[in-house]
Length: 92
Image 1 (cartoon, one colour):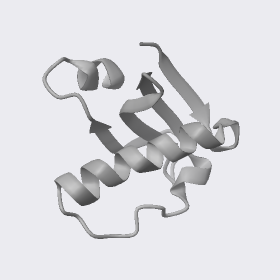
Image 2 (cartoon, rainbow, N blue to C red):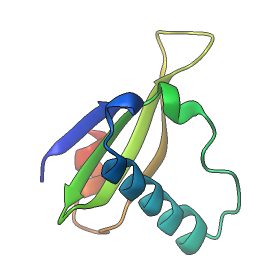
Image 3 (tube, helix red, strand yellow):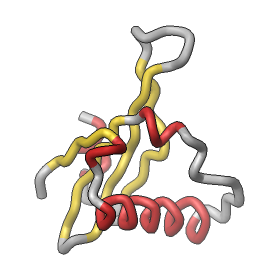
Image 4 (cartoon, rainbow, N blue to C red):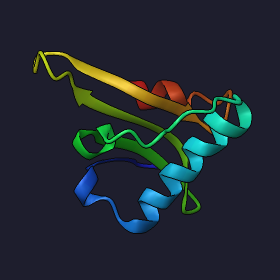
């Protein structure tokens, strides 16, 4: 698996669909968090993810804070394959 990092406008429709599907699987189905996931921060984020068999298996988004361009925030961090170190690899 290779790490893929793209800005929003560089994502293919398939990549975007798989990202949103993975986010829904973890945050809504697994963690039972009910909120509006698509919050417009995606537009200004760098989307970093691993794909295996055409499916996103780990994902995070990184973005600058509005008030300080020296600070990068991470959000929507997830892994679909637990216990194999892929989350650590993504964060590194």
